[in-house]
Length: 207
Image 1 (cartoon, one colour):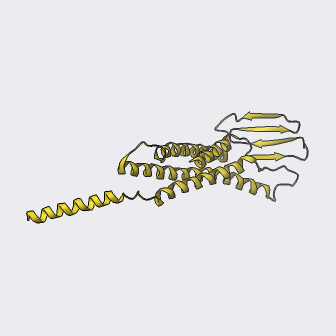
Image 2 (cartoon, rainbow, N blue to C red):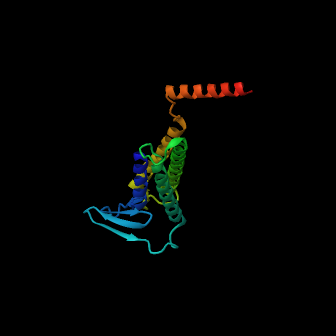
Image 3 (cartoon, rainbow, N blue to C red):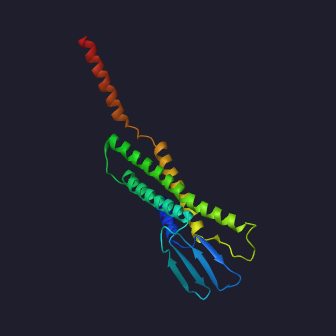
């Protein structure tokens, strides 16, 4: 569960950070540019940084729109998975009895599945933006003097968050599938056997 929450926070940081793609020019080496989902920034070597949000949602490219939608969907699904998994933890005594144990297992399994879905939704836009950066970087039609976008820190954070979300979901699901019901005590099993034999004896005498 701690891995689940940490991975979700990684995905949240990836969504907020503007360092999805970075670009530095040889003509102006003291400045570099950063591209994010919500804003673009200009970073100076002296330590200054100026960011500007996008003016219009409709004016964005389809790549940024798709990345926004998928990252927000990943965060929503991951948060839902966390909220579903918490009542299913063994440390929380919200349900009692065999039916309660089955309910807790179902909640934990559902939370694990939602975690894996959230991880996949996080990995898709991050990998897609990295793929576009690689294609444009090695495009022979663009002159070498033209600056090109490169990988930013947010992409690596997104890869880590998405992978850890999938791992956390797998751990939750496998822990529920591999766990077995607690064996009954010997005295309780002996009492059940004796009561069954007694009931069968009474039935045979009655017949």
